[in-house]
Image (cartoon, rainbow, N blue to C red; front, side):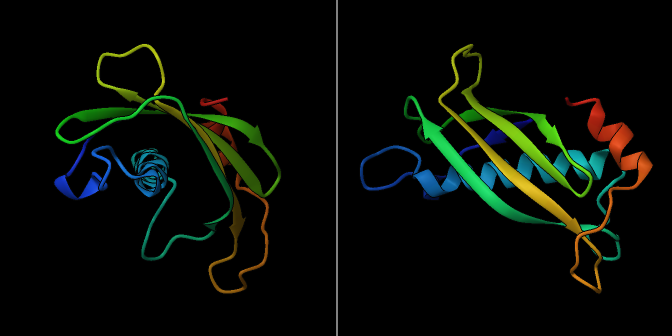
Length: 128
């Protein structure tokens, strides 16, 4: 997905602050889940809780400009999904950053891990 940088994204050094990349990760993955019909923010069950994140930075990005964020499923477990994420300046074939995060899917009420429904596994499998 394409995301526009914002004025507030730049830090004192004139480039996008490292924390913003994690916001992009969250936005790209959750937007995909909504578009795939898997994430119902208000009433959905199960829900994904982020339990691990990381990011490696290769080159700076800055406002103004758009970024392209690509996602893939690195690991599809019984109740968890690890997403691999790449952040690119628009039109660039070289990633500016690469990261991952892991969702553990839990029951909305119980907050205990729950097996991913078959429909979820099928749709997430398209990103493997």
